Length: 437
Image 1 (cartoon, helix red, strand yellow):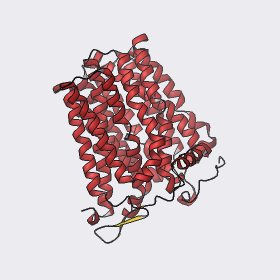
Image 2: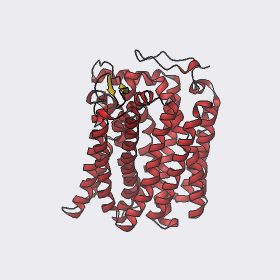
Image 3: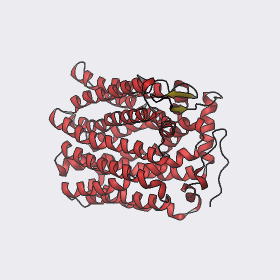
Image 4: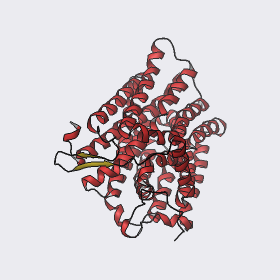
């Protein structure tokens, strides 16, 4: 079947896999905090669970990227979803049979997230080749890829909230395991053949359906060192990782605080699902719309404006203790702005990273950007127990606004803009650092 699909059909299949896999992750983020609360846990316990869920993403990024280049991109995507599904299914199975001690719950949550980053990196590496073969501009393809991730929030968050409210967190996790299984099946059937080095897969129309250049390897350890050196030497990526590390730390705090705020003031899991789904739906719309106009706009100034708006309203409203209608409106505004961020960053990354290094560099950049998330979730839980949810929201909002203004300082941030003629990096060797323009 895979050999008969055109490039456009395979691209759509890749986006479908991303949506379904991400839906599984979103439902998990809704169900696990309420499972902890249902077992008598405190806000600190929710923060600990968030810490355990995100640490494996940080660990899996740098080590998994180089592994993906050896295992193969499609096989890595399939294996990632299978591992996530099996570990999540084990949580309700153990709870309903032998029992589920807290250490086992945390261990399974950890294991389930360990291969998420490599799986997504693998799908991201497949994107530009399929987009080129399908005749789709890079920024539009990245916008569609990021929109698919946002769509998963739109669908997964209300679904997760509804499942938790109606059936409970354990059945919700059992259903989530099925979503991961579906994602693995779709990838295995529709993307098969793209793992081969320099693979050119013919579509139904006889044209090239996608190209994957995996390059050459100098050994696993050397590949990791080479990718790390590239990230450290690139002046723009140093700034991007530092900025996104801090904002993701603050976003992790928001993710830990929102279930607590929903339990206290909004009515519980179903309200949380609607809030998260509203944000995801607005971000999906923002990603799609921005993907069609991004190639006509500058990058840095829209990036700053959207970043500030993405954090502000959704943090200020709960800091003021307002009700569900206000929270939903703020989530919609923030989501629309957030939808433009990843398409901009994704296009910049694909332009600047040599093709043969993309999987490992994506993993390293993702690990750096995610490094603050475990700490953010844990600190937010502790702070909520100490000074209250609303005060913690106010602190996070203030920090977020200040930090996201950083690209206005200029310097290497100007490297976000397109190169003359839209030229991308050579795939042969890592580049020398650029001078700020």
